[in-house]
Length: 127
Ligand code: FES
Image (cartoon, rainbow, N blue to C red):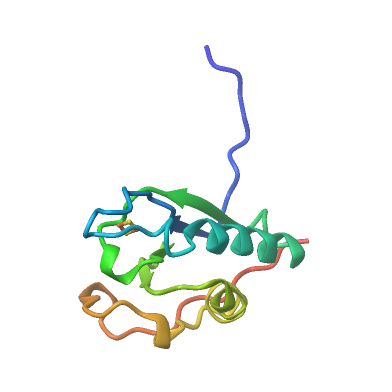
């Protein structure tokens, strides 16, 4: 029998593509476009704001949206952001991850599952 381990309960889960391809691969890759720096900045911002226990940032392999790299996707709402840079992270955290407002200027096109929705629940801040 496995020992009981309390599972963390994250309100949002953010995946940042850090996939790497050979330099001559025509698809390119998010690592070459700064995926690791974007991930590091996201983790830093979450930690700085005391949000790491409520929002999880993870590495992702290729998310199959390479032309939009660096690609970031936020769950549970499944909002996809493209061409994300380190400079965009504070805005994504403040607007979307904390206040539930989609950063529309960074949206990857063609997300019919959103049905045009740009507002989601605000983060429930726990002490
Ligand atoms: S390499 Fe990042 S989405 Fe494909």
